[in-house]
Length: 128
Image (cartoon, rainbow, N blue to C red):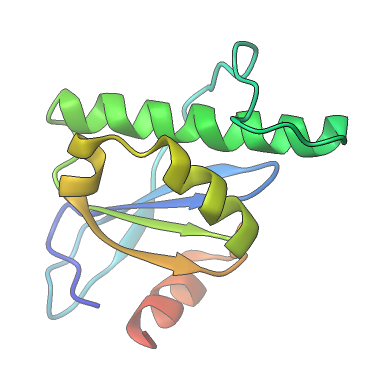
């Protein structure tokens, strides 16, 4: 996957929301971890009726992350985006995608890389 300069890579799992930015170019990408935004997960039901409180909290986290990303895209602070999440989480994330976010989306990777370092994330993206 080609990552233009400035592409934001969002790595989302049940507990984490990490952001990386390509500070290199398409030919030689280099990921730099950015500050993690604080998410408001209090007003989100997760979009579905799961029996588990833990599952609903994970879904609310995913929804809050997508809403934050969508605001950044709408505010022109994110031009190109890649989303990485575990398969189940990615399904929840997709439910909350906006048209604007979809237009910025270069790709997705259904893999749990919530604890991965930048070199491992880059290797996984190159392996696609």
